[in-house]
Length: 302
Ligand code: NAP
Image 1 (cartoon, rainbow, N blue to C red):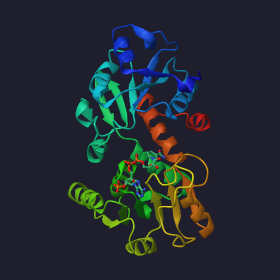
Image 2: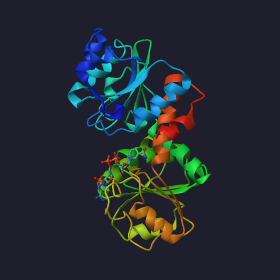
Image 3: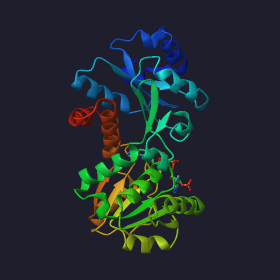
Image 4: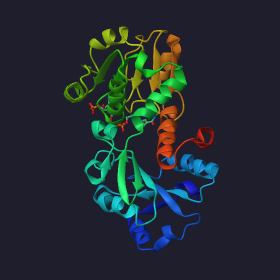
């Protein structure tokens, strides 16, 4: 079995908290993990292990399959098992909010945690998905997110919500979310207006309003899963992109998605979700170990 395919269980973590079991037998010792269900596919272990090696830290980052029912105890077992923290992925990001001892401001506004840091035996919840997206836009297009008028397709989903809130926090001059379920988009827009005082336009994804939204947007972001599977249709009708648009597809499954193909045919600049994946991991690494982060080693490992 390859290193990438090894998946530990929440029971292994509980045993480790008592000084027993397969996690305790690892060398170098397991000190970081990703909790998810499923978790075997995660790209985070090679990326974070490359950073640990580059930093000369005698520790490893492992995959632990944790179900929603197991999450409260898994979080409680991190400190006694000697862990420095953990990454959280599907389906835990929202469920972990009431389970940590401390929550930072961004995670609170987002209602989602992707990073747990142990300090003095306590669990601290953070969210690096949102600032990771801003770092990705700056790297891929060389323009600060705060200067761009944005249209977020699937803006009320998990990733879309993080992106929408980050755009609001940065003060983007115009923010439109186009969600398949219009009511979800409207609810998010109202919540952001109430908490951050920022106006968000909410439109249905499949509507004539998309044409107007595109006309007044600089950056178009796909935060729907369309493009993850070969043969998926694009999230936008054909022929609407212009060469002046910047197009960011959060999908990072490799290959050219239908949206990226549309961008290429329109002569628009585009990028895929690889950079967001990298930068959320870089920011996690900084939370656990501080600056500077070995970014290029992490990029190469991805
Ligand atoms: P999610 O929470 O399930 O949200 C999915 C969003 O897409 C919702 O707004 C949903 O609309 C919409 N949607 C789903 N199927 C659709 C369809 N067939 N047509 C139109 N809209 C559709 O999923 P997620 O976890 O946010 O993931 C969304 C995408 O983000 C995925 O492609 C994932 O790969 C990507 N992602 C990338 C990164 C990265 O680091 N690059 C990180 C996280 C996620 P409704 O509200 O109407 O259901």
